[in-house]
Image (cartoon, rainbow, N blue to C red; front, side, top):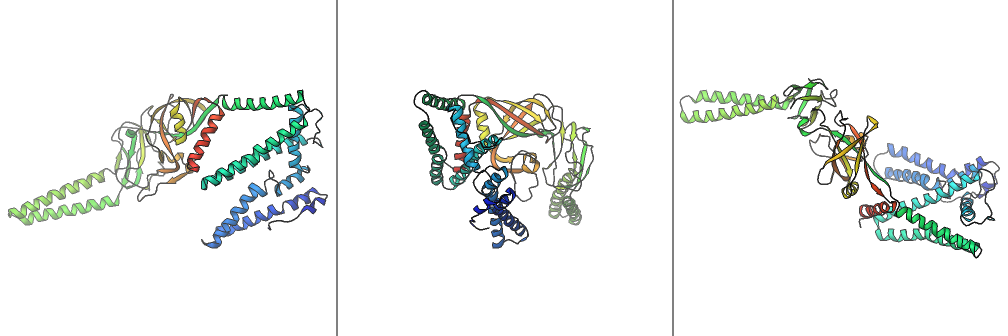
Length: 482
C-alpha cells in the first residue's frame, strides 16, 4: 500500500501465475485495507476514527473497482488481464488491430500489416479496444458530471479539454496519418469518400431515422373514495368481523375496535351528568339555581351523547354494498391505527382504476404529443391490456400514491417517509417530483386494490439525436442548475 512500486522485474517470471500475483498485489492491498476499515467502521462509535475508516473503505473500494483493479485502464488490473490472456502489450495491440481493420477493409490497403500473432486473438483485441474506449469516455463523463454540478465553469472547461483530448485531436491525427499512408489518386478519393459517407450516414441515422420511443412507469390498482373504509377514531383493532372477499351490505359490521381514551371520555361525561342531576335536585324551588342546574344538565347530556356516538363509531360498518377487500386482515387485530386510516374497501364490479406516478420530465414529453398506453399486471405479465388516460392530478408532488411504488415496497422510486407527529398513514415521499396519472384498463382484469401494474407509454417514433439533446438539456437543468 504505497504510491508506487517498480515491479517491472516480474516480467522475467516464466509462470504467468506469478506475474499475475505481482500485478495484483496493489489490488489485494487496497481491498484488504477497505475490508478492515469496513469491519472497524461497523463496530466503532461515531467520531474522527470512524470517519477516517469510512474514507479508507470508500476510497479503497471505489479506486479498486473503477481504476486500479479495472483492466480497461492501464493499471494493475490491466497487467493481470494481459498476463492471463498471454497477450503482451494488450492495449497497444488492440488499438493497432482496430487501425488495421480500418486500413484494410475501409481504406482498401490490402498490404496492411496485421498485428495478430496467434489464432483467437482477434475477438479479444477488438473487444478490448471498444470496451476500453467506451469506459474511458464514460469515466471522464462521470467525473465531468460531478465537477460541473459543483463548479459549472470548471466543468465546462474540463469538458472541452476532454472532448479535444479524447475525440477531436486523436481523430484528426489518425485521419491525416491515414491520408499520408494512402497513395494519391483513386485510393485517396476512395478513403475520403468512405470517411465522408460514413459520417453522413451516421448523421442521417442519428438525426432523421425514427426509432420506437417508449416510456415505462408503474402504477397501483386504486378504488374510488366511496369504496374506502376509514377509521373514524384513533383506535385499537380488536376483530375483523366480516370475511375478506365476502359480499357485504351497507351498514353491515366489518371491524370492531376499542379506544381506552373514548371509554375514559364517556365515563367522565357520565359522571358530569350524574353531578348535574344531583345539583338539579338540590336546587329545589329556587328558580335561579334551578335554571342554572337545568342548563348544566342539558350541556352534560349533549356531551355524553357526543362521546357515546364516537364510541359507537368504533364498530366500523360498510359504507355501501359490494365485495369486501381487507389487504392486511391477518395483521390488523392488535394494531393501534390513527383516525382516517384506510383499513378496508368495499368494491363494486369494474370500478378499480390505475394510479401511476410519472416523473416530471416524462410527463412533459407525454403532454406534448399523442401516446398509447399498454398495461401488464404484475400477477400476469403475459397479458397486455390497452389503457386510457382518465385524468392528471394537477401539480407536481413528491408523494407517492402508494407504498407499493417505493423502493421498500419493490417499486422503482427511492423513498423518504413523511415525518410528522402522529402521522402513521403510510404516505411515502420520493426524492424527485412527479405527477399522478389515473388510467382505466379496457378489460376489467384488476381484482385487488394496491395491485402493481406495469405501464408502457408508446409515443411517436423519434430520432436518437432529439432524445440526446433533450437528455442533455434536462441534465444541465436538473444537475448543473443552468
